[in-house]
Length: 221
Image (cartoon, rainbow, N blue to C red; front, top):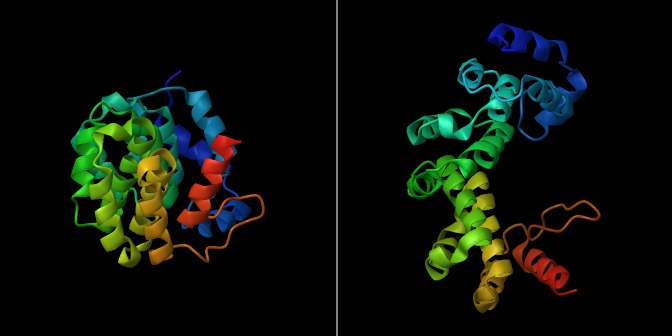
């Protein structure tokens, strides 16, 4: 059964929890709905590509997360996704849009190249995130040395979100390209990005020399 925007917003409003908002705010998000409960709402709606854009247009973070989960990526044009990325800067919305929609879109490569060249660091970060993902899937179509040149020159002074995406790309090259691993580790040690990043017990540090070393060790064990 097709739901209306008002019905979905009412369902999400009934799930608002100040405790969830406090947790989400620590990560830069602004919604008050537990993500497990939000996913349950989306599961109940199933795929509704007609409803998803209307939910997105509400500018409500929880509604946008539901929209991402119930949409069909192919129903958007590349230009629509570009506009959505620029509008959806709340971290969870931004991350889910890239992971659940853009990566599954037939024009993902066009968007990757478009965003890599963008002067907006938040948009450029999406290009680097897609590049890091491509390294893990089909790195042969990428010029790793060119990517490493840019990372070595720009990552240390990049804004936080862009820096994180570039660091992820650096690490993935080190993990998946043994021929350039030594260079990756040297760049990581020289730039020392995230060297002192607080890491919970049982988690791996994002500091590239530690991260790459741990992932390689696991693969070889």
